Length: 575
Image (cartoon, rainbow, N blue to C red; front, top):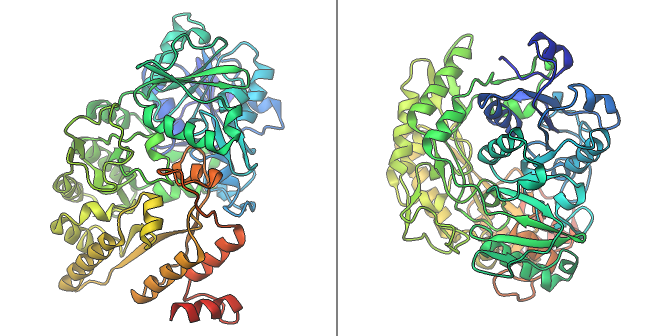
C-alpha cells in the first residue's frame, strides 16, 4: 500500500476494522528508509501484519492515541530518530527553536522524554496491551544512565516507563520475533530471551556472574561516581557476549546480548521494500527538513567500528559493518531516478555512519568475545579487512546509471583509514566531493584525542595534504570542513589555546564547533559525570559552562570579538 494507515479513514479505505500493531513516533511520518519507524513498519507489513502509524500525537489529547483503536498484538513506541532531550535542548541546556523531524521544522511537536510520556498514556488507556519500546532514546537509556538535563542517574527507561520490552539497536529481527511470539498467544512476560532486547523480571537472577551472565551494580548504587565508572566499564566489556542483570527500582532488568548482524541478503530485502520515499500526504505543502536533507541519499551500510568515546553508534547499530550489495544500491538509485520528474538525479550522499567503512569485514567475524572498543584505535586491528576499492567500484557503478548526474559522499569518512589508499583520496577529491568534504579531527592535542578515542592529528594532516594535491593536479578547488568538539571531558583552556594555534597555523576558519553534550551510554558521558579517565580512573578536569564558552571563542579565532578581554588574552597567548 502507498502508506501505512495513519488515520481511521485510511484504515477504512483499506477495508480494515482493526490493526495488529500500532507504531507511535515522535517524528513526522516519512516513508523513507532513513526513518526508523518507516523501516519497522514496512518489515512488519512484509511479514503479513496489519500496521498503523500514529505520528507525533498530541500528548495532551487522548483522542490522538485512540484514533486507530486497540492493536491486536502490541504498541511500538519510539521518540523518533533523535533522543527527545537532545532534540529539544542545546549543550548549554537552552531550548531549541526548531525540530528537523517536524513539519516546517516546528518545535514542540513532541514532549520531553517522549518515550516515557507516550508509554504512560498508553498504559492508562490500554491497560492490557503490550508496549514495546524502540528507537534511539530507548536504545541508549536501556540500563541505568546519566541524564545530563537533570544532572542525575536515572533507572533504565524500561523500569521508569513500565513498558514490557525494549528492542535496542537496529530492531528488525527482534521485532519480528516478538510479533510472532505474541501472535502465537505468548504473554509479553514470557518473551524474555530475544537477542537485542531488554526485559523486566521480578525475581533475582539465578546465575551469579557465570561465564554466560553477569550482575551489574544496582542502579541506586550508581549514584556513586566510582560505582558508575565500574558499571560502565563492565557493560562495555561484556554486553556483547553475556546476559546482563541490573536492579532498577526494586526490580531486575535482563539485558540480552545484541541481535546478530544482518547478512547482505537480509539487508537487501529490507531496502527493497516498497517505500514511498516521501512524507505522508497529510503534510502536503509543508517541508520536513530532515527528509529534505536525505531524500536523495542512499544508505550503503550500517554499523561503525570507530569506537569514538563520545559516540553511541556502536551501542546502537553495532560495531560489525553490515553492507548492502551493489545490486541493491543500484536498484534504489533507479527508484530515485523514476521519482525525478525532470533532469538527472544527483545522489547527495552514498554512505553510512562512516562512508569508507563500506565492505569492511573482520577475519574473525567481529566476535562478541572481542574486548576491543574500537577496531582502529589506538591502532588498526590486524584482523580488520578494509576495501576502499569496493566502495570506489560501487560509486562508479551507481554513477554510470542512465539518469544519474553525480554521486557524492556527504556522510564523512575516517581519514586514518583513507590515508592507506592514495587512489581513494584522489577519487574522493576529484569526483565524489560536492565542493566540501567533512572530516572529523575533533581536536589536535594528543591528550584530548586519547580521551576522545580519536587518531593522532598527523593522520588528518597527511590526508589533507594528499587531498589538496589531487585537487591541484586536477585544477579543482575543494574544501575540507573539519569538525571540532570543544568542552570534552579532560580539556582545559590551555588545550583550547593549542587548538587555536593549530587552526591559525593551518589557516583553518571553521564555521561552527560542536559543544560536547553528555548523551546517555557513551564513554565520554561516563567521564563527564565521574570526572575520571575512563581507562585509568585518574581524575580529569571537567570544563564548566563558562570555560566551554571560552574554548568556543578560542576555536572560532577568526570570528572572535576583538573587543573581548578574553580574545586579547588568547591572542597574546597564541603568539
